[in-house]
Every structure is written in C-alpha cells, then in structure tokens.
Amino acid sequence: MAGGETGLPEEGLSLWLTEWKREAEDSWTGHHLLASVGGAAAGQIDFLRHPDGQAVKVVVLRVHPDFQRRGLAGVMMDALYAACPTAWINHGWRTVEGAYWWNGYRDPAPQRNVHNRPPAEWAVYFDAVEVAADKAQNAHLNGAYGLDGHRQDVYRYGERLEAEAALHAAAFRPDPPVRIDPAAQPLHGAVRLVLPPAVHDYVHDGAQDPRARAAALLEHVGHGNLPREAYWNTTRQAAFADAHREELFAQSPPGAPATHVVFTLSPLDISARPGACALATSVDFQRHPGDVAVEVTELSWRRAGRPYVTHAAGFAPAVAAAIAPFSAQDASKAYRDRYDEEGFLRVSARGNAPPFADRAAQIQAVADRLLRGRASRARTSPPRPAAPQAAVPPPQTPQRRVPGPGRRA
Image (cartoon, one colour):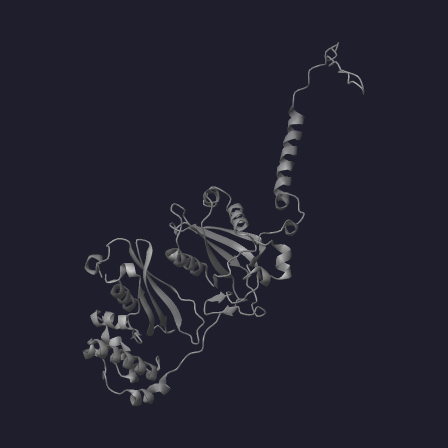
C-alpha cells in the first residue's frame, strides 16, 4: 500500500470514513470511504455494513479520471478489508470496467468473499438468490472479455446456482430500519461559508467574545437562511464531517479559506412537515418544500484547514430562526412576516427593545460602582478655596444686529 508501489504520491494521500445518508429499508448503515490526494477528492467506495459488523456489501467503487490506473482503487479496497477484518464481503455485480479491475486485483481475504463460499455460511446476511444472480452476471462478463476473474477462488464458478440459492433463501433475515426521533435530542446541521475577509478575521479571533462572534455569524447567514440541503445529525461531529466532505468537492476562490459552521437546534417535531424524513442518525428536510421554524441553542465553527481549533458559543435563551424554504412561493405567512425575501430579519421582527437591553444588569452594576466612587471622593475631598472678595464680571460678547426686512447689514 506504499505510495511508491502504487504510483501514488507518498505525501498527501488520505483515507477516511464518513456516513452515507440514505433512506434505508433495513438497519444496515451506509458509509463512504473517501480518498483524497493533495486535498482533492480522488476516489470513493460506497458500502453498507450490517449492525453487528460481520457483513459488508460494496455498492459502488469509483476513481476520479485524474487518478485512474495508479492503484488507488486497490488501496481503498484494501482499507475496507482492514476496517472490517472479520466481516463477510459481498462485492455484488460488476460493470465491464469493474470486471477488468477485479481481474487484476489481489483479493486480500478470498475466504471472506461470499462469491467464494457456499450460501449456508452467509445466507443469514445476504439473499442467496440475489448473490447467485450477481455471480452469473460477473461470469458472463468474464467469459465475454476473456478474463479469469479469480476463477480458482470462486465457489462452483460457472455452474447453475438457482436451485442451491433457493434452498437458502429463507435463511435471509432482513432487519427493520432504525430511525431517530427528532423530538428526543438536539440536531446539528452544517454549512460551508467563504466569509468576507473582515468577517472571517473577526469570527476566528479567539480574543473576542465568542457569543458576539456567534451572533455576527448568524447575522451574516441570516436567521431565516439555515441550510435546507444539510442533513441534521444527532451529533455535532457528524455535522462537521458533512462539511468536510463538501469541502473535498468544493471549488473555492484562491486565497479564500472556508469556514465550517454547525448550528445546534432544540429538539423539534417533524410529524406535521410533509417530506421531512427521519433517517438512522439524521433528519432530511430536503423534500419538505416549506420553511421550518427552529430554535438555535449553539453555534460552532472552525476553519476548513484547522479542524483542531473549534470555536463555540451557546445562546440562552435560544434564538428563533428558520430552515429556509425551497422557494419564496413555499414560505409560510409567519416566515414572510418575520424575514425578508433574502431570509434576513425584518426591522419589525427585531422588536422595539432599546440597545443593550440584554446588558441592563451589567450596565446598572457599572453605574452603581461609579456612583459609589463619586460619593466616596466627595467625603474625602479637601475644602474648596474661599471665593475672591471682588468678582470680576466676565466680558460680554457684543451682539450683532440682525437687519430687518429691507435693511442692509
């Protein structure tokens, strides 16, 4: 797996796992194994993992054209095997390109490939009939293009498998999907921002008040512009992972560092919002056309290139905000009354509270301290000197005559 052996650079190659958000029909969790080279997205494996971790289904393997034929696909597949060291691996059916790649790939654990073992060993995890169909598809491609396809490892390769698969089909036990209850915990959603230089410098200045910086970020985004295309996760770290994934595929202007911002919301009920969907670890509002009124309890943010420095500030009380509607026509009356066409607070929605109303106690304490100091100085101040015997009247400034109508000055 060394870079020099695969044709990839020794430095700048990174692999990491992130969640694959999907509306599942079972309890298998979705994952992306992403590869980046020099900070650019280079390849990806999409796969599903059984809840007990003992079975994996590869769905898609893809490599960016700029990084093909350099061994990256093999590096990613080896990493998947290493991440699931005891699991059954189901590679499914292959395309023509996939068949050629598999023909040259060295399977690190052929004994864990379900295509190489009898269904009685793995049929509880995978539908035996479906696996037989995938094997038949792969056998056809191998025969059509003259590929070996690791024939010596494949169990009963090329023989009719329908009858045997049918014997074990009943062993397959699909589990029902697991979905979160959005009303049971806070939700976290991320947005990737390229801020104006002055705003960027201010919000990342650790010497400034974090709550004021969080308020400035919220004002910059707009209270009615919380991201509707974000997945709202059960953890803040999952939201930051979403932002990092977007970072890999984003095209930023040169010299403009991005900021990843995570909004933390109070628990909310989605039952009355058509199209909103609870997934295994997140909530998807993308198919709900209207706005969603929420309460922001905390903001967290970090520079894209410095994930180890995270700024955060809480709001007490929570700040009323909204996930943006799909379009202006889909906005509710309450949203239109509170936010303008661009999603920013209307003047009327800001209320008539005087400036610094939330700092009344602090200001009063300062005023009391000043008054106490003034009284103390009055008690200890020296007596004033006696007034002079003859006071000299101050000089009077001569008044200028103002000409009346018809007169010259």
